[in-house]
Length: 278
Image (cartoon, rainbow, N blue to C red; front, side, top):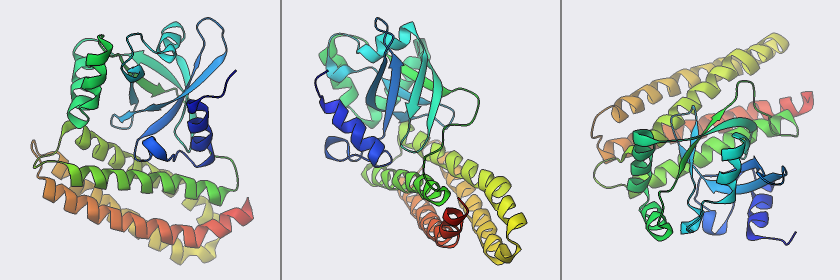
């Protein structure tokens, strides 16, 4: 098969933990692998996605404004079981084509955040399908390599999302759009879940294996509690029907500063230990 632009994006995505340059440098990308409707062969494509609160992610079958639905969309109509790569984890998911008000509400949210979706739909002359990708039960496939490097990969994904949200808040108008609010809430849920898993898993194991790390783990626990409080305050701001952009910007900046310091401290203390243990 001939080499394509998508092949280069896929290779860069996998080599750099989900980060790519060029046109997609500040885009939220995932890799979607479907099963060919005619061939039965796997078909992987990079797609922009919309966060949707943490339980699922959303993709839009725009095909760059082409009049026909893209091949990946036709594939998942035939077989909705797909594989998603988010730059850190890989997981199996169920693809569901949204219909009616659910589809229209999501598309309106996407359109308000990026008018380009409307331009694609007008050019295509068709209603652009919106697809929800919901992970199947069970743990995702973790990143390969040493445990410490895997921890850094997870942290880097949070760093990137924080940077994207700060950019989005800075560019927002006087009030906050629906998709930006969802992006912030999804980040809140992701950070909270990550800390809970660390507390009950990694930190509990380290406390049992390395009693000498008690001061470090106590500091990390205190930082998790402090960030939980900031997340609660950020969620309260987002719960206001028309949150003020400057208030949100201040809260996001405060959370970003705390998270950055926490991740740096955690990596300094734990990455060498985890890599040695692995």
